[in-house]
Amino acid sequence: MFSCNVCSKRFVRISHLKNHMRTHTGEKPYRCEQCGSSYAQSGDLTKHIRRHTGEKPFCMECGMSFLMPQHLKLHKLTHTGERPYSCPWLNPVIDWLFYNLLF
Image 1 (cartoon, one colour):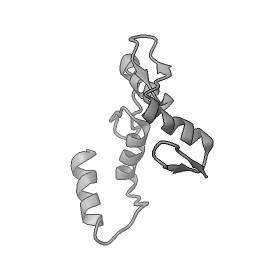
Image 2 (tube, rainbow, N blue to C red):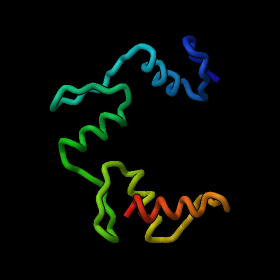
Image 3 (spheres, rainbow, N blue to C red):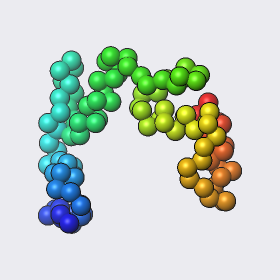
């Protein structure tokens, strides 16, 4: 385990600790060449660049588009009916979220 010397948070991988340290140092090494915005994580820059390019992952079933691929992945479950997570108390809440927020 690798521990942060500032807040003692622990990480399994050294790369995760290095990324975490940017929250303390304020370092933002990932810079958008188009507008100059800077980000601490490469994934945040990737999401930002999509705003410039207009690239959006979209659903082949219904054509709905999403800024982030993980939102598309969740949306696809509305077409398949698959429920990867099950809880007798939360299923009604999940149903409501799927049909009211993702459609």
